[in-house]
Length: 212
Image 1 (tube, helix red, strand yellow):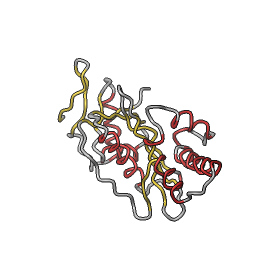
Image 2 (spheres, one colour):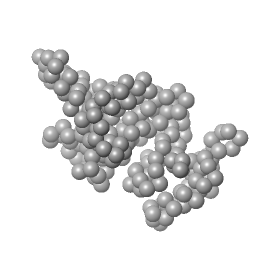
Image 3 (cartoon, rainbow, N blue to C red):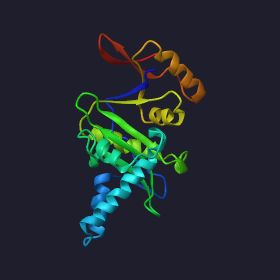
Image 4 (tube, rainbow, N blue to C red):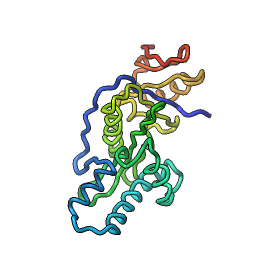
């Protein structure tokens, strides 16, 4: 079954308000901050800290990957991906112990820029962390001049879908069964969500938006 798709078209900058006790930085900014705070850190110590960030990302994405993958997966699939890279991977981090509670990536592919690899550590789910870190990643793409941002997700990820709708992403009816599948999603979301809202649809190969 094809995944659900959502679109943000001509988005405006989203306020990023991390919950109390948390802050948001990219992977590259986390490394920069550590190096500035530890000017005598050896190359080995810098590499060790980088590895801790990788472990935090892997833990946050455990539910997406089905398991905690080895560090090599992070360096190959994320840091090594020219569409992602260290400056586009965002973390929401607990101030008290620098624990990575969640992550989202601005995947800036020229053809299909997307909000990518959104995850939260199991111990932090339900704390509203994804909304803030997704806003930061979305803003990175808006700041880069991207007018159309997409994401892929699954029907059962109701909390994530709620987050994306709050950020302004629209359901994308790109296949015939999408309207029915989104109706099921909205049934689960409840009456708070008005189905007569902006959505995106395909016509003559172009993606448009309208009000149902």
